[in-house]
Image (cartoon, rainbow, N blue to C red; front, side):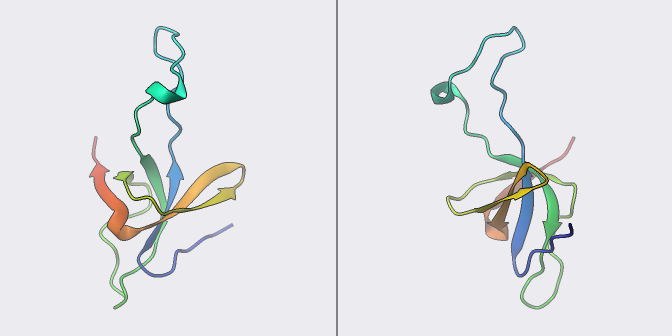
Length: 91
């Protein structure tokens, strides 16, 4: 299935948070950090048709309270507004 966001939206595959430390200790939900990270799957365009400055495959941090969740092949994906993308993580 090919999904192409329309407008200034980004489709992100959410990265699941670690529930167990490297030493095997389980982390309760209340103690987990609220980092919102994901991998960009697809991007839309600006209203004038120009490309957004991120691309598929980028590892990003995002914020915001509004997102639309969809299930693609059993995995959680999110549509977020481009303005909610905080940073691209480069390794």
